[in-house]
Every structure is written in C-alpha cells, then in structure tokens.
Length: 73
Length: 73
DNA sequence: GTTCCTATATATAAGTT
DNA sequence: TAACTTATATATAGGAA
Image (cartoon, rainbow over all chains, first blue to last red; front, side):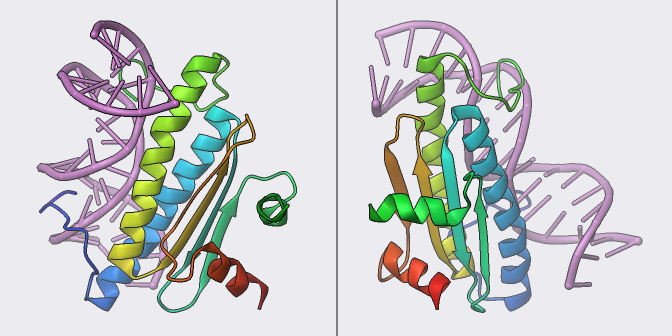
C-alpha cells in the first residue's frame, strides 16, 4: 500500500510474511472492534497463522463461546 | 472517516447504522481475505448484526467448522 | 438495502533505529 | 526480533440516485 503497490498473493519471504501478519492482524482486530461499537454488533475473528498459532478477537459479552453457540442453535 | 472524523461510538440513527454495517462488513471481509492470502493463514470472521442476522467469512478449506474444530482440540 | 462518487481519514510497506 | 517513521495506497462518510 505504500512504497510499491501490494499484490495480494502469498508473501514468500518468511520474515516479511510474519511482519505483515502481525500488522494486519492488529488492523483487522481494530476494524472488528470498531464495527462492533459503531453498529452494536457481536463480532468474532479467528486467525490461524501458517505456523499454527491461534489468535482471536471477540466483543461478545459471553466470549467466543456465545458466538459459536449462536451458530449451532 | 471523511466529511467529519468518525467517533467510535454507537450510531443511533437506524438507517445510518445499517448502511455503515453493510459497508464496514464488506471492508472487514476483504481485509480478512487479504490476510489469508498474503500470510497463508486460515481466517474466520463472524458477525451478528443488532437485528440478529448472521454474516460470516472463512477461507478455511473445510469451512468454518474446521476452524472451530481447531479451537476445541 | 445497494451502488456510485469523492474528499478525507486511516492503514500500512518499506525503511530505519 | 519489535517499535517508530512517513509516503502512499486503501477504506469509507456523507450525499445522491
């Protein structure tokens, strides 16, 4: 998005990929949080990095479980 | 973010809130998709609007269930 | 409820420390 | 590694249809 337009394809360089993951994870969670507040919505975001690590965000009063529960019933 | 800086608090006007929800939902899903491609990550996003409607995005090969499954085991 | 327009706010790639 | 900088790409508020 900046010094050179970003092409949306897998970043092959491991270091760059991890840096981008960290930055965009922060951006995505921020956007999710804003959407929840602005629109009075329940929001959940799940991420598994390609190293298998889990990251998540939720603004649900009852945590992620409540969101999942809504899915199932 | 444009004609007047947006304050992050609940939008009281119902019409405006729904329009913003629709627009930001699109933006959030797009960001989630980009993160998945750029960083080779599995991504899931769940949204419940305040009218109770469910929206979701996932790039998991096996669908959202696979992401949830990873959470549980 | 969606889609286009466009001025401006925001996110962020690459570089630097 | 992680944090800061900043130029630029991108998202988006408000308006209109």
